[in-house]
Length: 310
View 1 (cartoon, one colour):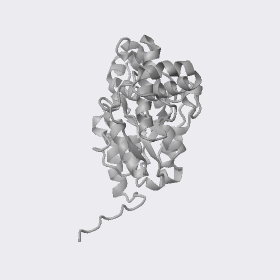
View 2 (tube, rainbow, N blue to C red):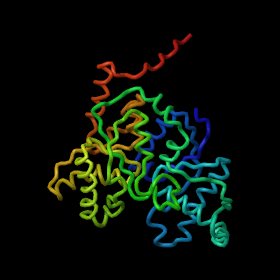
View 3 (spheres, rainbow, N blue to C red):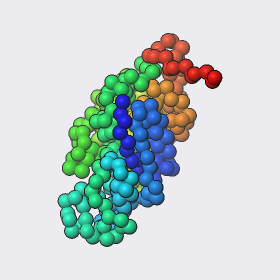
């Protein structure tokens, strides 16, 4: 059992457009015994745009949040959003490697950051800190019809010197996590191809063409579901799928779920709690497959009955 407590930095997206990622992560953390605590008064990390305007202030945004977490007395912060993770990790590494920059940044924030926090992605926590047999034990359903390709996106494992986790070109962490839960994972050569990220606002056609390549490869390898770990990737592949179909003359109807939602389903967590209904491309057939699995007696283990009130 994992008894370690972690700080949890949800970031802006998980509090709004990616709420289902936030909700599903918290649900599976409960099942796996991962204790999390959100820092009080956390602020936006600046995400992708901030460093293009002022690198020093952008670093200070990350450092301020790390300082808050440091005061909590926790050694590790989980940052599920790859952009947030990259900002926090870069701030930590820059201040660690450059004492002069550390001094300048600490002058900008309320209280100094003393380099005592390790930022990690949710994938890294589940892959490195949770034994695969624990994930397997918690999986109470199987979905034989489900064929998943894991899509990591550009930055959760890149650059190597920042992420310090998994292989930057051929990551396997999401593959192994899903496989541990009994989910069929297909080999996917486009694991780290770019979907266009935030260019969806200013260069929609570019994003739609890039995302189309990812979905085309998923279909080519025989997948009927894409698993993601990034709000921007999820948005581009799910929300824009109709746009992609219109522009590229395709007919994609591939559900794009956060890996935490898939885990939650096989853990037996209610689809409503996992935000399955928030997906644009319906994943109802996956939910229906769970219901059929239960009817076919495919339940792997019985959930404990609630104790009667005395």
